[in-house]
Image (cartoon, each protein chain N blue to C red):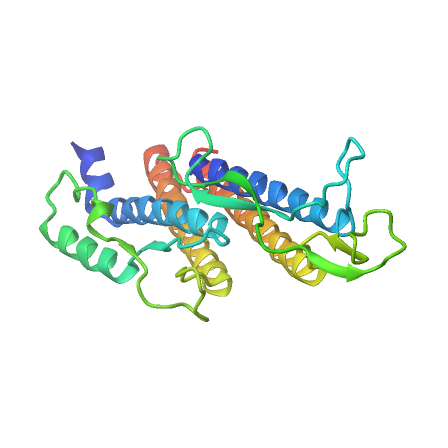
Length: 134
Length: 132
């Protein structure tokens, strides 16, 4: 029964990482430069989830296998006054769609809540079992 | 010998099997819940009907040592049929179904535990040879 709590913990960690990645995407939805200030459009990131615990994939649970970059094309916007505009006046903005990110964030949030509920149920079952010897 | 008979001939061993079953099923449901967003993940469950069938057979065949433990690998199964809408990644996830299964399973577990507790209390009273 205690394994169910470990399974729940793996789910919470995975959904938290997913939410961090989504938040980073939304914050960088208009970023056209890298951390050093060079011209480099931000590329959308997403988590790749896989079954099994992170430290032992043979155990039931879930883990973030990798955080990958979305290779779809950047959005082009005509903005000739922008310092990062190309010769034709177009700026390459990140391939981040805030609507998609918002829906993903809701899904991650619901999955997190479901996992918390599952852990509450697990605790109630453990408590019931412990009452046998109380 | 007397204690063995009291513990193995009533419903106590059957309730014990029920608790084992609900605990094992809860772990599978927990894994299904945390993998709700995992692409291509096939949900797993233990078939309650199959378990009850096996348990009924064991109960009929049991002797004074009580019924044998049910091997859950015999009734462990991947859920093949789609549960709700189809997903492009091939997963058959359904949060509603999972939460419902989880609630029913937890209730079944708690009922079995409560019945076991009452049986142990009765046994304790019998051993004390007084009502309260």
